[in-house]
Length: 490
Image 1 (cartoon, rainbow, N blue to C red):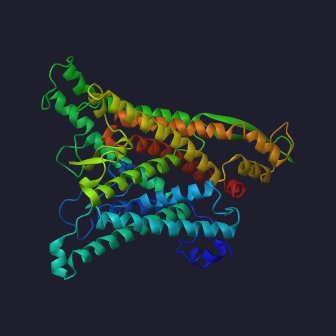
Image 2: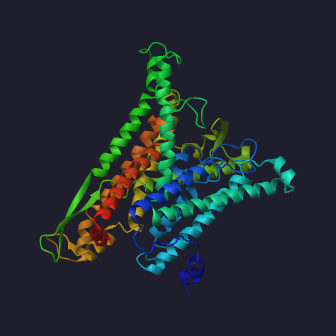
Image 3: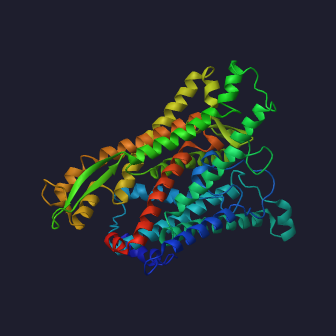
């Protein structure tokens, strides 16, 4: 008996959001999307009941903008468990260990059930250490005494809230995927990053939950003399204008990333197609430069975030007994941060702090940059390949889709094997180049800094997801105006 037959009774009974039976009008899709987005913002402002004291900071730290959610709220875990479960499935699928054919309805149901089961497991594996290990979320001891459940009882109460929040994110994502526009994960990333970008432009110090001063507010204070920068042409003045508080470099990097991603989305290799039976009917199959999109980059950064998470858990458990080669830590305003060892070198470089340290610690800084670049570029290319194969975007699956649509490549026999060989000239190479390029851009944006302290990966994801969301909305509107096209595209 195969594992599929054994697990089928459990996986096929996992709770799921029902698919719409017919066409969902565009306005209703927008309504569902807006409703889930409002619920998301509401839940990111519902703080965990039973917490008290100071924890060791946000366990996701600088990865928070990618993994969404809100620190200390019921959505504290964000999309982390969903992304981690996707990494596991990507690796298992890439190694062909699952034996599932997603074109088969039964296997597709098993795959979706397995994904949900893994998400539940990851919620437990992530939430339990945060509450019971490492001091990341401190319980309110007085509340435990008042309720008569003790500290452990309060910890289980906090974990229950994290568990429910993780499940809510899972089902909100499913609601948008089936009833709304785009995907919930992409929408939550856009919401979190956009919130930080707006705060980075107009935040007034002392107001709101964010830290720092907004770009426009900082320049208003510089021009009125409230923030002294000294002689503008002196080294200190130039540093203040271009770095902090002036943030000119951060603004330039933010705009540059927007321009590069939008341009890269338009760069493509177009393979000509013609209809096998309808004479004169022609088309093109575009192979974009960022063929796998930037979504695989979530998996790369999530893997990096999990490595840092494991390091903090280990340090919280064994403290000073941890070998120095593995990692050393110190508590800062941002929480527990690595200062040496493997976990330090695997942590991404953020903002322009590395520039000042380059003169005093060139070897250490260059090694960190090299590790971060290697991790992101190689990881981006590798996960892009996994993404293409597991989402039926590879040469074989694409050739079959073209064949089933009645199209063919002019000058070649109408055979899936022949079309697959033609597509193999472009898709694998473009996928690797696009994945590596996205990784390079993410590291560069991190090192130069961005408005609002958004990570380079978060900014890349936001621009790319917003661009694709715009294309999807335009397509939905077109189909709404011309119902015949809806039948053509299914």
